[in-house]
Image (tube, rainbow, N blue to C red):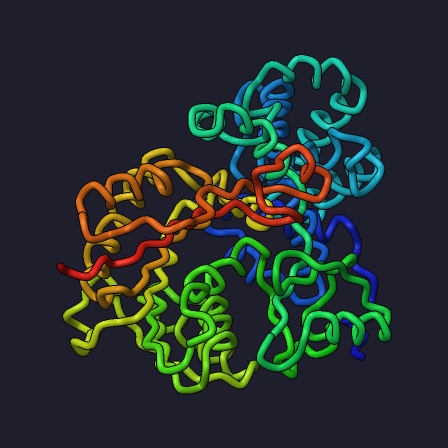
Length: 446
């Protein structure tokens, strides 16, 4: 191992990188994009600190407003909010608050773009340490600070889920576990779990084919992953292929299936794991680079699909005229159900995005429904908890398509962790993200 990789990483270095990444997210970049420029040696620690910062950003911004009534320059503000987000809750702080403050000031002193503001940062953060309880008390009635979500997001959840909005927000602020899907065409869940246990990897079952790791780890350190025996996929997302193909069991041979918005390929892979080899799967995605990711994921599990870079709504550009037995439409959405895994989403979205994305979803349903065989199925799903992307969308679709029969479906799955299972008896058991599912059958013409 080279010296650069083995040398310990100072906390101030990580905080510098987190502040730069946070500044990028505030300019509209995704967390994934913001982390791409971080060196491999720093990235794991920076990602962990960035995610925690994003989960507490509402509180941090409210505290910063108490400490500095005029917002400082973007990078200075990002460093200040990073330190406040990580230090304000001493029980959840990754480091002792005084250590975080010292290292944040050190990060500023060692940064060409921040050193002129090091004294300002030091003054603000020292005041925070002195007056911490009073400052927190002053922000407790700020909705965004209390829930660490934009106010419009909180109001939307109160309207859509009046009985469960608080639980959804609390769950969103927790880190998600690492969940994997067992490749049922290659092994059984019990066999894979036993193999993991023999190698010191603890897990517990979730759903029909899922295993949740007790301790998250790099995928290539998971026994059987490189060989295609399992794939990373949340328990809620694992329901897609199972629901779509359930009514075709046990006759899953010779089916023609479309995965309309397929990247990065997890659901495509799951479909192929459940289908007979005589079936064919067409996987579409509008982004050619994301199509390459689909191919890579399928190669790892030893499965083959026809992968095409195309806009699913522009059917004339890719459809060969043959109807499908089953279509999976995992439509573009706000991703409001997977905030645990992508804490940047809440700060990147705008309320207007909901209606804009709902229009895209509506058009995809309109364009793809004619491609379903009579007696065939279409599964509509989104990783959203907003009703406009779920129940409302489906109600409108059924009203305008008299040949669409809504089959028993899961509807809105609210995100939950293990501690909330008893509270949400009507939700799926176990730990999972937020999702929406509606299964339609095309009624044959009389």
